[in-house]
Image: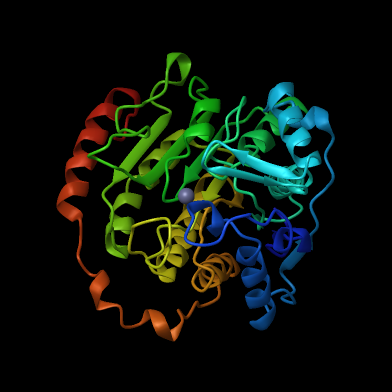
Length: 365
Ligand SMILES: [Zn+2]
């Protein structure tokens, strides 16, 4: 354990200025904007948290192409590099590239590695990589859903293949969307648990269904908890109740949080109704679990979260929980009575099905 419970914050001004979407609002892709990070960094400075003596600021390391190749095909890497060199472009409908995308996406992986390795090496107790573009929709062979490279998958494969770290790892994905790319990497791997709570389109159908449990050796270690749109803070806590028994039974040596904040009520892409205190409560709970199973080792890696007014408060809410300081939500969140409509009945149905599906693979579910 580190002496002072240090918290590593991986930050870099490039994330606040590069890889700017080419289209105006309200195009979906316009929201993955440098202003997300700019707003976070300004806020953290304004509340003077960066000078806290338990905060360690880390600039992402440079990584070489062979590290990228741990998670991505040469073809995909070269395609991203070439399109960036040409000045950018659009890949399908949900991925944009600019002239600086390749370099920034590579830097994001460096940041995720710093966050995770720093926790494993006891350089700090917890960490938060404030990086972009996000990663959890990216696949080995392709970019997808605003994601270029899979930051978390790449960092975990780096631990496995370069650092010979073979202990169990739990990924907890709280982004509004299902991390289809991230789940795929470890779908047959019993040593990496993937647990995702995500908004589910019950009418159109999508990946991230409750019965996607993993395959082969990995069966039972992919856990999808799809929830209806509009869930409230209380609904979210109710879903999280399932995390305690699972993480305590799995006994990971490290917890990685795919930290998306697009379940926030004002998010332009997600449709849920959380306020920033929900992320404070989440961080507090996951910290308590981590302290009981893995000496508190948690790395938060930023994924989505596109409301530039609320996002900085959500980040503050997490960092304050890690610092064990009281978090006071902003004034504008105190009177949102329209968010009180619980989805508990629908969630209960999913929870019952999920528990019965998991029961054969877990002693305590
Ligand atoms: Zn998302």
